[in-house]
Length: 203
Image (cartoon, rainbow, N blue to C red; front, top):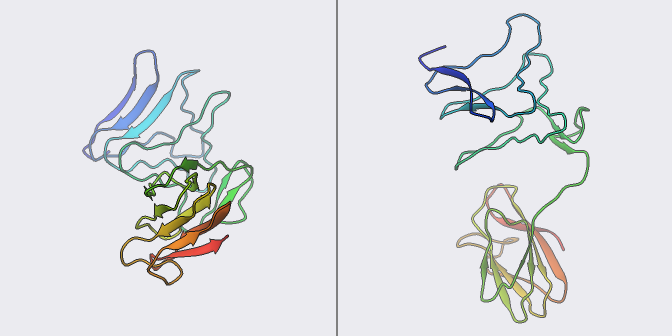
């Protein structure tokens, strides 16, 4: 177990927690071929680590994380990252069948649509995906310095055009200056390439 501590306890009227507070590991399960069930009736089960790496997995078998009737939450807190999957494998959402690509979504997808008056300007945030400008005069949307694969859609839904401006030293389709989305109802889809520049991939 290393030099960490393992706590398996009840938290009042809530759930059961299995966690490590040191640098050791938490292992719950048999070394043979049996099943592992961690349940708490209709209450909550927490499996957490305070600063280390938390791995929930099974050798060559199937790992099921599910809830019957309740809500299943997989989340992180703070500024850390939440990763699902690994290189070479596929993740399927909405079905138990094997995926056809790295990420296979079997069903509808919801994305945020942020309606903004982008005058005099609007700075794109990490939470943005679709930005709908309701400006009556020329507005400006400032794209961020982003990682490869980031997608932003900008739509001019008001009477004014929208100038989409990249950060300093970054281009849009090879140009350093702004790119205009024309009203009424013009839109463009932007994506970051692996060279960290923005590219238009749809109108």
